[in-house]
Length: 253
Image (tube, rainbow, N blue to C red; front, side):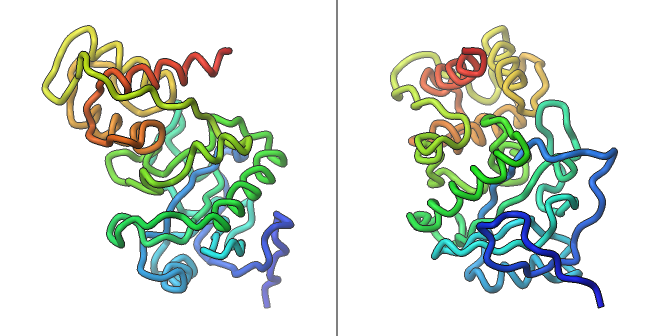
């Protein structure tokens, strides 16, 4: 019989092993954390899916609504949580990240607020993981950040600002929504090129082409879900662009 591992984090109360993992490729070590919502009607159903070998999906950690944390995959192993994804030149995000599933029915379930106890547990877990692996604040990411064409979780109601105020993640207060230049799908030219260059500099997988195409629109939508949640429409208005510019500035401050 195989041994059930001990949790890597002292915050995890149990290890409920998933078979869905393999070796991290090219001797990679975690430099990122990817946050997901489960997106299923119940946490039990989500946990069953993540432990079902037929599903071929998993995560390292699973956070219940009441704040309980369980571990499914050892941190040294490559859990299958991010899928086809990209961030700052890395295409095998599973090999360089730790995945955290947060129980919430997601958009299909009305995207209810995340419970305060649950968010407190997520904050504590991210602090623990970040300290042990020396993960930079800007590498605490949404699944939608690394896969904007496919994923929308953990969604625009996830409290990234609260995490930042607790010392977790990278964040600036979003610039107020105001009148001004708006870039949208179909636009072409220097302003769009400059926008794409900033997105790529921050880490998003967008081509600097000067054409506001579908990929750019989806990337801006993902950016807004994380950093400018008051209006998520895929259009780069003054608030979106200024928030992005200040985020980049905060990296070098």
